[in-house]
Length: 260
Image (cartoon, rainbow, N blue to C red):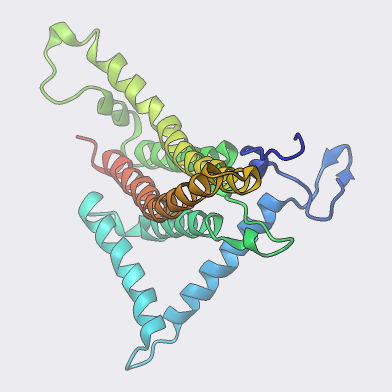
């Protein structure tokens, strides 16, 4: 990176936490910043759910929040999967809150403190792709286990005329196979774009202050206002993307459980 310039893609670099790579049998097993923030997300989620394990007769705010989170996912599963969907609630819950916590941790303004910098694990396609293909794999396993070869009738919509049988099933199959890619890419693109915008406007603030003159402070002020606006939008996107990922997974599971 050139002196005085800010690289908006630098924040996505996966680097060893200890500053050097560790190899074992020819494989890099370094504990990276990505792994560190996954652990952070897991710990935060565990701490949050510990409030729901108190089972007090008169629940406190923490317990109410945890129980409300569980009820929210139960309702999502009940509405979108229907009968037989209760068993998938733990997975949908884990999926939704892991993505939500990972998104929120990624936008924490820790960079204002010296030596600290957050890492958004959901801004990496490897993470979002694993979540998407895991969901897709569960859908396939559930569909084949429950219906056997009848599962493939999912690609023949009810009422399809015979003269369109050469076209509709391949289109439905292609649409089905695209699902994991759309799931992973949607979350990845949304989080990456937001972080790049924040970094770019942050560089405008710094460069405006360093430029001096009459326009420098104006550019910095306008850029700071944009940072505030984009940050507020990012918080909304964090929740929406977690909800959409969990919702679509529920709908795909509905297709696997009930077919048409």
